[in-house]
Amino acid sequence: MLTTTHPKPKRSAANGHSPASTVTIGSYLATRLEQIGLKHHFAVAGDYNLVLLDELLLNQKMKQVYCCNELNCGFAAEGYARAHGAAACVVTYSVGALSAFNALTSAYAESLPVILISGGPNTNDFGANHLLHHTLGTRNLRYQFEMARQITCEAVTITHPEEAPWLIDKAIRAAFRNRKPVYIEIPCNLSAALCPAPGPRASLLDLPESDPASLAAAVGAASAFLRQAARPLLLAGPRLRSYGGVTAFRDLAEALGCGVAVMPGAKGFFPEEHDQFVGLYLGAVSSPGCSALVESADAVLAAGPIFNDYTTVGWTAQPAVSKTIHVDPGRVHVAGVTYNDVSLPHFLAALGEAAKQNPRNAATLVEYRRTCVETAPPAIAEPDAPLTRAEMCRQIQTVIDRDTTLIVETGDSWFNGFNMVLPDGASFEIEMQYGHIGWSVPAAFGYAVGAPGRRIVLMVGDGSFQLTAQEVCQMVRLELPVIIFLVNNRGYTIEVEIHDGPYNNIKNWDYAGIMSVFNSTDGDGLGLRANTGKELAAAIREAVAHKTGPTLIECTIDRDDCTRQLMEWGSRVAAANSRPPQHG
Ligand code: DPX
Ligand code: MG
Image (cartoon, rainbow, N blue to C red; front, side):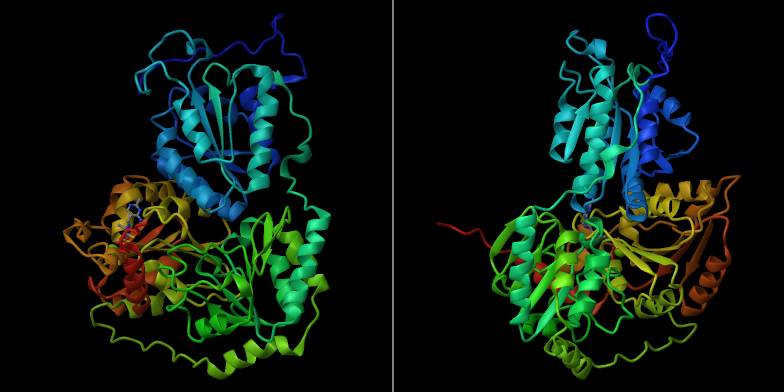
């Protein structure tokens, strides 16, 4: 990075005084971020964004939170958006933004409104035949913007101060309406340039309207479809929360009185202690009693589902179109007929009002209670026996209280997490559509910044941790008492189950020891190691009592000690991956 110094652009109109009705572009952006409810933004400094960071710092209502690199910065924002509804991150041009794009893609896949703000080249360099540092080394200064367009629902570049207010508002409005990430590029010489002052927040947070005729038709068709069903069932999908449907879904469930299952990415969106809860649906590896119920239902209302190769367990589990009401964010399909321009929460709320309790609707519940075998509580392992996955999970379960958010990384931590019981109030975070290993460490950091009152419990595998481990130092820096269970099974176990080879072995680290590196002379993180159940119990006691920084507990388990679900799921996904090419 160059050590360029930035003379502050004059904050003045022609006469040297700022008219009261103008502010800097950076200040305009800060006001908008504050108005949409952000209390923090995440950042990595670079010479294309330094003046912008200065401008954002002037806003006393928002804190600037720093990350070790831009990938982590994007994931921290993604985690913050999960806790707080939306997020922003600020990076430098190209060397920074291109790393952040991976996390922005995650935000797209996971339907989270993350605003990526990148500093950009000085406006005088466009068209001046200049080569700029941190770029391709060609005259093309538009490539970043063109790339951003592919992974956002709105990308804007501010080319003149007068354009800034409407472009910034346009991007922020799009993020909220679509629940997707957006990109704002601000040339480095415009961050402190003056633009018209912001008015009220106006329609920035408005959600899409529904077409009344289409909504009424969809509700009518869905009501009729559910009325004729003998075995209706509700299925919560991962998009339910992003599109504001959690409450309406619960009201609808209670109005209908039928069984309710959740997809893995929707764990926690319907209370597990609720009478109507029938478990987690993941085809052959569903929770006990759940798959038979979903697969024998004659009407499944799937609200915000994502049916991909993973969630359908290698295309082996997907409710038939003819018996599904499929509620997407902007449209509803009832048994194969599509109703467009219908918002998900509007549809669920209207259907809930129209729905009548039908004694038949409880059929699936009665059957669930009859067939679901009570699982015995897990046995307590001998205290000095080598730690097993089952004993580790039994003990982690004791940490999950009503104020806990359990965050699970891609790997067997997914399946360990699916098996955890969430008391009312506890929540669950997973990045199952994108599945970028390493997501969870910076996302847990961002989540903890956004939800200071909650206990954050992270389960992450050794392989995943190695991607983004350094972000633990930011938890140390901000004294966030995140509890990290690092599962050291010496490799990429989930990949072993899908397709094994030497590439699934990784270099071992002293994971517990890494905390002293992050602490340096001024931090208070704890790094502990558990090789037995007794050591884990002692480590958990320390972690729960430790409030001035994170605790990382390295849990050493056998390389092949994985869940039964992972093995079954892995073999089905592997079969789907190895389908031969179709010809003709
Ligand atoms: C890979 C995965 O150690 O967990 O429980 O041992 O599997 P388990 P680990 O964290 O290992 C994770 C590993 C390598 N996936 O098994 S899930 C491929 C992959 C990915 N994301 C990125 N690169 C590779 N999902 C960024
Ligand atoms: Mg592993």
